[in-house]
Length: 185
Image 1 (cartoon, rainbow, N blue to C red):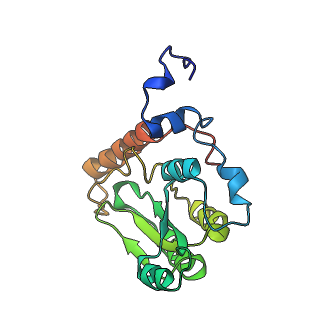
Image 2 (spheres, one colour):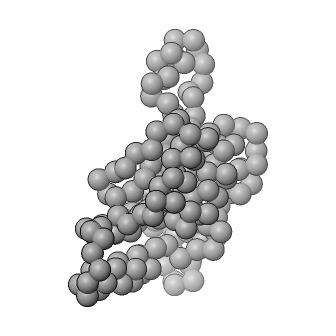
């Protein structure tokens, strides 16, 4: 591989780092593969999707049944929404609950990282799910992969100088740690 703009050689990168380096700022072929009539993304896109808060998986509960019938895995996606500081509005919670019912497997998981996870999303429903999350003024960008996945803090709804400082600090930290790419929107 050729040298990158900073003078480093992509030859020394791990496989995943090489995928990122060649991805045009985390774009890869995600946009093209999103419209393909297939249940899965390609291997490189699967790695890049992580930076957009998405894991490509198969349904473990249906794996044994599919194997017994000689069928392919039941592919699905998990979407992780970042919720900095664990602070989420009632409207955003309701939006996620609605998304889980419409385009996921009906469960909305609240994680120990103060995130939401939607499981069982099919590739054809991914765009609608992400749009719904963004409409609720939240994001999945940086929710997975080798990045800081969320900034956690006590979400106590207290209006005092200390908690206002915490809120500003969280916003600043999240801004500094979020991947810089226009590929998300």
